[in-house]
Image 1 (tube, rainbow, N blue to C red):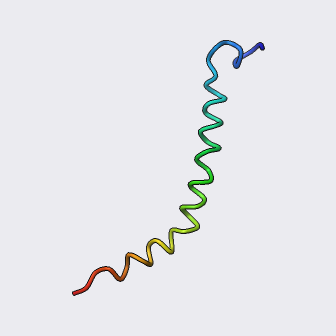
Image 2: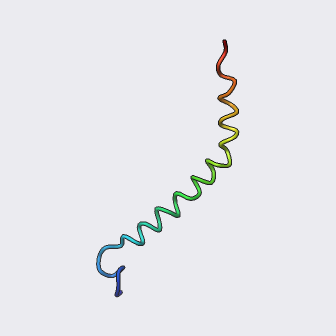
Image 3: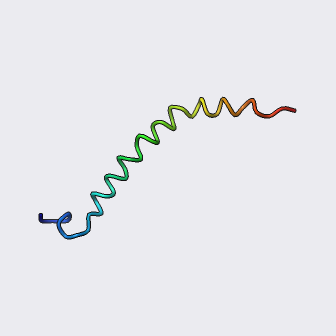
Length: 46
């Protein structure tokens, strides 16, 4: 291999993998955010 990936530091590859692993978690959080917030609204009595 030649170039950036062949020099021993695979930082761009690791960064891309981290981003790809973060995206589904963020999407699931935004989808279920309304359900999570609506279940905690009725928890306070008084």
